[in-house]
Amino acid sequence: MKTYAKTFMFANCQKYGIPNGVHFALQLGHGVEVILFPDPPNFEAQLIPGEEFEKLLKDGTVVDAEAHINALLKDGLSTLLSRE
Image 1 (cartoon, rainbow, N blue to C red):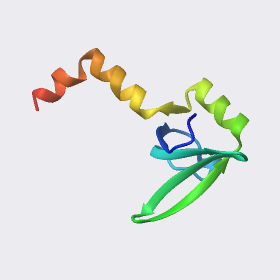
Image 2 (image 1 turned 180 degrees about the vertical axis):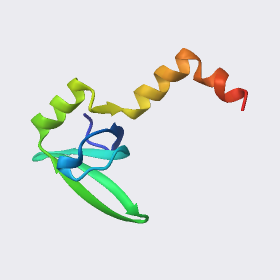
Image 3 (image 1 turned 45 degrees about the vertical axis):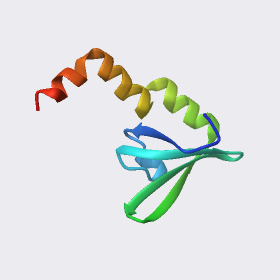
Image 4 (image 1 turned 120 degrees about the horizontal axis):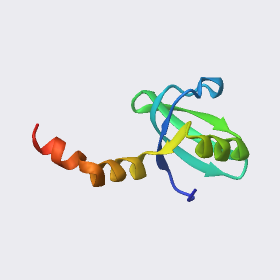
């Protein structure tokens, strides 16, 4: 992960205090801070240890949101959206 915030889709990460949905994540020396906006512009951060975050990426619990949307666009999402 880069040293800037990146968007990820999270599922079943309640044990870290992270609800299902799309959230920002920022890699720091002590792990990955997930930034939540329960009451914008107010935010809170939840830490996932770095090694655990990598496991969640590998098992599909956490997915790179931008890459996922781009793959959907390749698979015809843009055609579907243009009909709306």
